[in-house]
Length: 132
Image (cartoon, rainbow, N blue to C red; front, side, top):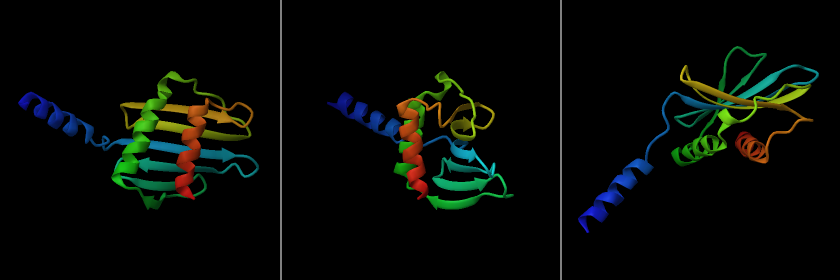
């Protein structure tokens, strides 16, 4: 019985693991007539930032709960962006990027005519729903 309780305790502790503080998710779109890019960056602490390419600084859009933040980081890890083709930009382009400072950066980019896999598109749409 004690082994069972120890196992449950260890499982619980590891399931509560937080997102490494330097990781971030960046979802962006841009190009077209204006050429302006809009980046939305989700930090490990739950801050959702917006940065437009024609502005100098980013602004905080909102702060997500720990569970919602953790959920997005789990989803992006499950996408395995490192194993997907980087893609090519077009007139209007879209990107999903998962990075941790100098440790790694995995990015998928696509244009309207060359859509990514359904899982990447679903992630992009769910992430952009946060902004609205």
